Length: 366
Image (cartoon, rainbow, N blue to C red; front, side, top):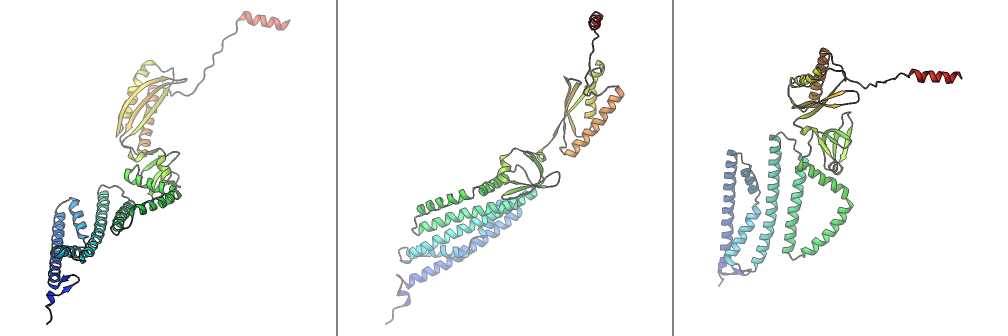
């Protein structure tokens, strides 16, 4: 008489255990899929009502959960519940570990994509020029590091000597790094520029003896357009090793203004001159006066020095304002009868005494 199917043994388990295990597997899979769907919908609804980006990132990361991961973890749970000591349990456990590593990799990918999207959107909202190439580069590096760690964990689980493998890769990587060191220096300098942001596209920058407007920040080089129109290309490492002056970052522009008058100017006019020029400077819009004094007695001029700040740092505004101040100062000097000093030299000639002049004449006569 045939034995009942449920009582027969298959791969170390009787049929009834297989039936219970398959039932638990299917039921737990359906439950986990339903929980995933509910959580994603609730997070998405909450994210739509709030400005907090954490909800959006959580929904996108949770949405990266793969169906195969749910099926594998459900199978692992079913085998653990029904018969953890069965021969198939070790195989299921190894598959579950592989599935977990793969799923972690997908979660990391989703997290990096979400953070990159958030960073790009945040930069546009603030009006800053975001570097999409940099975001992609950081994402690529993050994925490479994450997947490398996951692969090493997987190999270690299968009995591979990961320590020896890392040592071998380290020696080979060192040789490659030394060969491409200049390129790596430029790439790391690029990351430093993107993170620290000493300048951005559109900034007017002076680097050493070169100056220009930043047009493009690349992975290896940065390109300027000089005032005369030509393109200047800097390796990123050379650019960061030099002293940079970024005029776009200025909030105010300092102006140092000097005027020289002649020494024959009457004292009463000298005493009023600093205050008169101050009134001219303060009459200009967006100008903050700092100080003005008679500062020095030069070789051919009495020198007055004035310091003030342009609250509009644009160079064209500075030139226009300084031109008006110069013209008004000239008008003031003409009205007051004051002369601008220019380099002069006075030669004093002393007359020769008559007695000395007569003796010389007699000597010549003799």
